[in-house]
Length: 312
Length: 312
Image (cartoon, rainbow over all chains, first blue to last red):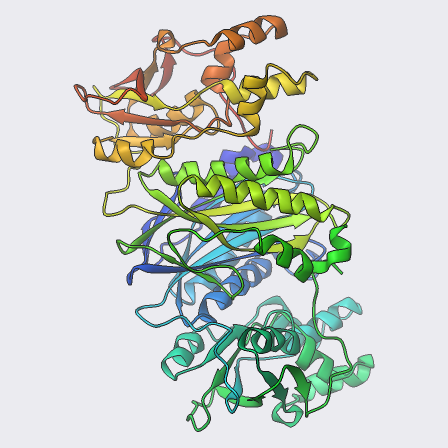
């Protein structure tokens, strides 16, 4: 049944029945606004928007996959402040001819991804639109910790990374060339595996800065370098190149470091820590902070693409 | 200069310089997420999306007007819970050919409207899109009060309204017929005058339910009636029909009660109060709550249109 047939309130009714309740939900969907616990007197909030044709394609990802991706992109931003996500709000703009089961699948994906951290979709809005668009706002709770911003990196710090990198970009290249395998890479693009708990963990470990890598590692570390007024050097030998990624790169004629250093969509967390810190195994050191500016790879400028600009 | 020329970061840079700081802003735009005060350990949150051609037309409203409207629609939802708005987050999807000054004007409108309540735009996201789309999330602070939901209306309660009603719908009809006057009505459509402070005031006065009238009074009171499991009767003689509205209705061949009872976009607040409450002059009684279900006008079913469905 198309959304033109269900109407606005029919669509909302079908979606709302699929949304769970999060640990922090005080009032969920159905009123003018939701009410969510913000236990330490502050709330962390971030918004990311996904536009069909630019951030996703329906022939490459199922509705639930896109829900997972939309939620992950936002939840990762909350984790990157050192906070625990508590809630999502979703503005969904859909062509009226869209089948309502697609919207239901999206809601399922959003709900499942939020559920990984005990959060839930607590509110939102829908509208018809010629362009399928999903704008998500995530809320989070710092639980008494200081937020970890981008501007605290110090010369001498190490740069460490938690979570997969390059997988999603490789999967996107695979899909864009008309292939559906290797499954490892394609699935990584379809559903990121974000190490949400590593964000608050980094805060406890004394991270001096942190960022969600969504637009490419070098570009996002560039934001840290600029905000912190430091230079950052990335060590290319710190990256494991999984066999399937190496093989795919060879088969497709791509430099796999382009995926690792400039690819987005995996949403790992990158943080800087004081020298000498003992990091849990999930955090691997991939670079260092020095006096100066900009980001280099093995002390040299990177000549590949830097990352993603959503208008170019 | 078009947004294709400024690029994503150029656009964001130009917008961010125009955003102020709200009273509750702890960390504003520029990091992975914003941090906003939520002083009583809870945060109120609501999302509304505006799509070009469906919620606004650029030839009918300037960029700043649309910013005012997008902010007002969301801030009113916060007020309708009895809360004080603290922050906005904005996802902006724009055609790449759009002039960047339009986005700057939008940011100015959003900032000015939020500033009316001491709030500010604290974060957001941008993307290119064929369809100009503005998704706004508003946050708010209940300051220790209980949220006023839709489900507490009791038989015997009075229904009261704060703020203008019918003006914006009249202005929209005027514009849609190709006219630009009366200015009072057209301006009301372009920039709602929302009685934000009346929301927390109603909570203090013991409101049993409250809703932001955004889709038409009868339709929105229908949500209250349904959630509260009561019937609501609206008294048509309680409404003042301003002279310019009466004249415009006559000239355009429209029943002005269609504007009053089924028009949106003014964002007045409708609340129910226990009988015998003494209301400040801003709140005027327009109806009553009784045992039963549904919404009537002068004890009779309303035969005009009920309100707005964003898919029809």
